[in-house]
Image (cartoon, rainbow, N blue to C red; front, top):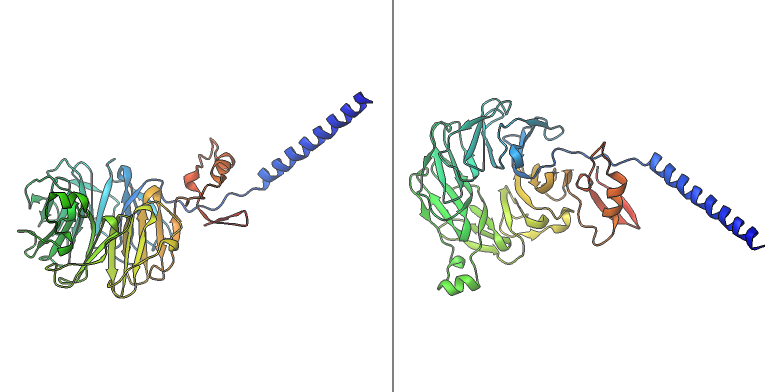
Length: 383
């Protein structure tokens, strides 16, 4: 009797195992991977659009992509360099510049079909670049670099002597008036096209002595935007946003306490947008006078390096791990053109999906998958 029962149990276990195996096999056979819109796997540092249709993004390892149809399709362009590209500026659909590490400045006159190096005279990192026309441009970067050109970049000259500071961003409203922002609350202003520069110091950035500056450090500044020669905004560390209505003679703090670094800020019409670390996103609906945190509007915790709108409705955000987002409603909602997954808050779907999707032929990794939500135990995919 014991042998009979043992054989019966063995047969039942074998049948159960076969059923499970067949079920798993059927599941694999009929499983359909989500449709992922992939532009690049590289970090995207900069985004620029001279008009509604033409958009460029740039980032790690000399990566440049271009869309000529408003973001519907993208084509990679050969930059000819392998360094990080952190800044872009285009004056029309044909003429543009890119800047990056190791003193890199690139220029195109054919919409990016070909990119040519320009001699910056620097070996240090150039973090941002801007042009107002085919001749007049400026660039900033590490060790206090402030460069300018009056011939389209054929010759770049130093506007300021080298110093121990990093300038992160700049903005010119016309050929005379421009601002540069950087480390330790640095703000520079020129009213003569960059021939001379003066420091601007917001009242809230003043410290009585060195000890106070250690206890209450002045924030590093990363983003700057002006709508005319009087009205502007600057963003930085600690979720800082400051505003001026007199060309920088005085600055008012709008936000000064937070955990995020706001790397980019842009204002157009009655709306404004600021983005930064850990998916940080702030928005203004009153022309930049007040700002609201919009963390729930974008389901991602990667850093965002740039935000830009071609109109009050049509805008783009670029960031880490190839993240590119588009909004067509003024920043109220965003569509992931390519994004990294948000945190699953401890659920072990990451390990499961790695096993399901990773294979040598497709090389599909976790970073290729974007999960929009987990509801009732089911995964919802962003297409």
